[in-house]
Length: 626
Image (cartoon, rainbow, N blue to C red; front, side, top):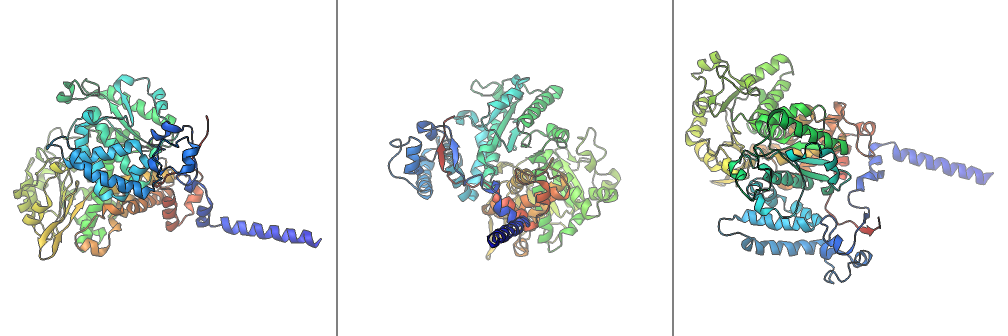
């Protein structure tokens, strides 16, 4: 009997222990297996010998252990010395420095493109090591795999194409896309970046060569957000090109016909969206570098039905909002003072209008989120496009730009009129912020910058956001030397800080979309949100704006260093998850259901995000026959 009661006691203790262990979400996190599925479990492979060495997803090169070499029939196919990943990276870096010079195709070929070639060759043979190198040197290599070098890559893609990466859906594939998606080998895809190549950076229509931008963006999703590289898919939708040079180039790899338009164009995109979401219902699709004409239409068409967003419209807007809020902080004011900022915007394309809409919504929310607040926020913006200041007198104004057309009576009082040039607008408005999203290099001329000296702000902000570098509206040297040392400067492409003398530094803040889109994607994935809402995008922007310390902001540093991108992404993703929960959009992810997620504290959400970020470590490989 005593033995039986002892068993009862032991059983009661076990039950109590389990209850304690599972009663708290933080403990639940420690027990769940899903958090380590990305790298710590052995990976089952169905190939061996040379096949495994030729597969970049599983190839470890000289890092295969002797037991793995025996298991996978690799003994004798590799040099006998087993190397650590650190030794492999050291060998690669030595090689990179040596080959940088030799890999150039003559003096006109920049070192950056040579670097891209060498990194791409590593990507082709060993994905894990490629991402290890990229993450460890993200500040140096982000401009190589993404802007500005990716622009050169896209321009030269025909000659650089070696190994297919991603998928191509073309106008010639109509009616076949639903079956085509099954040609992609991954059973699960978390992230797709898709482009139609119609407006690559500021370089125009590059047709099928635009896939380089989707590949570059996904490299950053892996490096910054820890999305598993086996579950990303770059996509090119080839509906033709209006670039005459490509239409007449016998070596061009895409369809040599003019772009589809109207209903025909939409039918292709519709079929693509239906196909990918049929095979992968939980995938997130990021639209990238679609011309303005389609960027907004497609965003409105799909955003309430599918998990998708447009980085040029919404990502650029979020990064700009974070910078604008940072500029308010740099003036020694609270972010809540943002609705008082006078902002002149140069450029009314998809990026410009995206920023305007987001800035207006942010101001309206700070003013109480009423219709009156939304209407009054509109009066803080002056929009100048290629034809000058946009007023209500303008004929055939783009639908998206119409809400920002100034009232004629209002501008006349300021001594301005329809079509007033940028210098006149800046001189009369005396803005706190001059924001460039025009894709016109040098638009902020000496005269424009001289006019900015009359700004009523103690620390005027100049945002030259157009990419790539040659399209920047001005350089930081020009901004600091003409407007003064107190300027807050931000750009879309990377520039070096400016030495202002006397130990003073003019900080060049790169308003890189990389600060936000990886976190938006990761947060959406981990929350299982049905859509990507304005609130989620706003939460991401505000998280980035608050990331900088008061001391940094006072010095004029309004964006963090790219070297801390994984930490930034983790925080942004956590903010997105939290907002998705608050808006009741979260549906959970894998073993984590929405109710469980809803019980997490802020710290637990951050921990949950971190545990689900893939890191490039070689998994143990185990062979199993099909």
